[in-house]
Length: 348
Image (cartoon, rainbow, N blue to C red; front, side):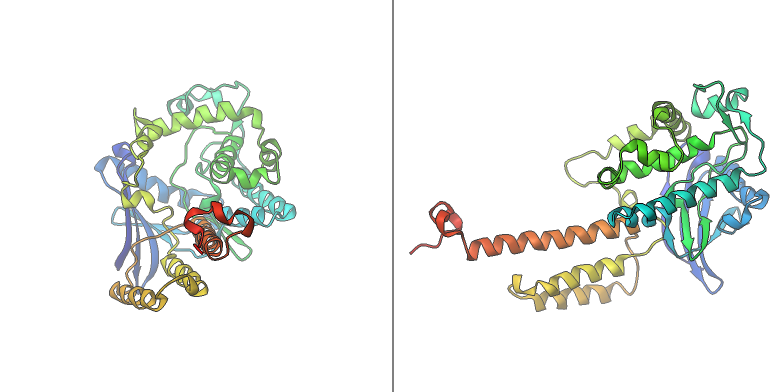
């Protein structure tokens, strides 16, 4: 099988450092997770164990273990995150409500037949998430933990969880799991949410009380420290907060299971073609870009998320609107203010 993509996560503790790759061959296409250090063997094996022991195997993307790595079936489809983004962009309250109901049903399905227990009764919780703030908080053992909207793919009427790397044998509340998903989405799309909902109303759609936000953020920060060590992930991110864009390429690859450079290439070319009157020699651009494309021999160098594709397209369109605005301003300055335009003023 041929490896067409690979990403290494080395910022974590040794027992959690992994390589995620995409392999393509006659047997099919797979997303593969493999430990980078001997200490990580148990972590990788536990992923396959989660699938084999799950009572809700139909909700999980199929996987198997081979030569110390876990192979996931590569799935095409829209993520729940993209569906929610589309619904918010279209200001469809009904679609947002339906998506929230779908997500809540997935969580309920994973919890069904499990017995609720007090989170505080198992001291293992504190080792990962810190001290339990609510002594009456109830949770479930062996829940799939990282259930963000990006990790759920829709294929027609079917829903599949594509990443179940994290699972804990001690009780964790399903509300905390939901909070992590909603909070992660809020951090990226707060403006879109605010155009339709208050944060409290948006969280309520997913049956999460926003009053618990401080507590859940504390849990989440402790989890980050558990995975990344004393520095914590927030400290690691600060290394990349520079005025320039001196960031490793693998930090820019937003998702591992979408290949969109062909679409990005098309967006650029289509917008240039539609606005070719703005260029002195647009035909030269097309010749150069086609030549560069041929030189790539079909190789993929950047893999972006569907969310990035949407935002990138809006940026390209907005950029051409700005160019056209200033071009028109230069060619047709307002008559009354003509003498004040300086550079734009045509001398008599």
